[in-house]
Length: 257
Ligand SMILES: *[C@@H]1O[C@H](CO)[C@@H](O)[C@H](O)[C@H]1NC(C)=O
Ligand SMILES: *[C@@H]1O[C@H](CO)[C@@H](O)[C@H](O)[C@H]1NC(C)=O
Ligand SMILES: *[C@@H]1O[C@H](CO)[C@@H](O)[C@H](O)[C@H]1NC(C)=O
Ligand SMILES: *[C@@H]1O[C@H](CO)[C@@H](O)[C@H](O)[C@H]1NC(C)=O
Ligand SMILES: *[C@@H]1O[C@H](CO)[C@@H](O)[C@H](O)[C@H]1NC(C)=O
Image (cartoon, rainbow, N blue to C red; front, side, top):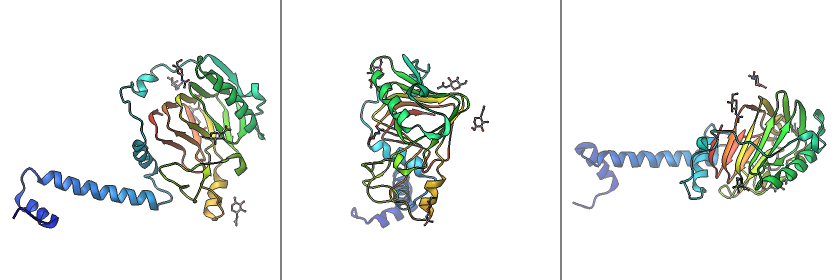
């Protein structure tokens, strides 16, 4: 009498009610939801669930230590940075044609020197700044002035190949490694991407074409990707025409936009 199959159990619950009715039904529902979401995650190349799911999978990789104050507390005041430089200081040319990849990379190398001594801000003035991928640093602000547009390079080599995410074990679209994102960050704390309604335009059409005409070799990069990072604020700018997902936070906490 005590040993019953799950089906019998369910029948009994339907008929009899009582305290255990809800928990069992809830468990069954959750189980089905998890299975459904999981298979969507695996099978669908494009999915409106993509970003929430990455938050879910991101949670698995979270480090412990929730005692820290929340992001909105952290950013009650937009942090001032000790060193402020313009992309022009690094040889940048905002004509929409010249590649600024080297300028952005030089700038970020310089900015990274101040992570432990007051932080830094890179200003992108009005203009059209064509660039390949560059990496952010901690205690850093990327500030797009009014009329500033960062344009994603149309040369796939300017979106170099990086390792697949550990929780995927492969590129999402193609096996193996994947293209880096235009604006990329790994292991960062206290990053602000903001400005006076400037724009990051990934010019992603080329990538979507490569995908749809089946000539894409490696999984596409995102417009902005942050891995293993915390206290991130993205505000007062326009992000458009991403090659893939627009903002891809993974294994992150305290991200505000
Ligand atoms: C960022 O700045 C804070 C305050 O100055 C400092 O405590 C922290 O170590 C810095 N973070 C990094 C990654 O250098
Ligand atoms: C940016 O970081 C990735 C690893 O996260 C690295 O593979 C890549 O070389 C870095 N790019 C630059 C320009 O430093
Ligand atoms: C911000 O920029 C977007 C596109 O660049 C534009 O549609 C929008 O009107 C701008 N908003 C303001 C307040 O200037
Ligand atoms: C696929 O799209 C890319 C990007 O637009 C283009 O360069 C390439 O020629 C296309 N290939 C085919 C086979 O249509
Ligand atoms: C975004 O703009 C609002 C309104 O001007 C301002 O209060 C806020 O501090 C800005 N955010 C950042 C990160 O500067």
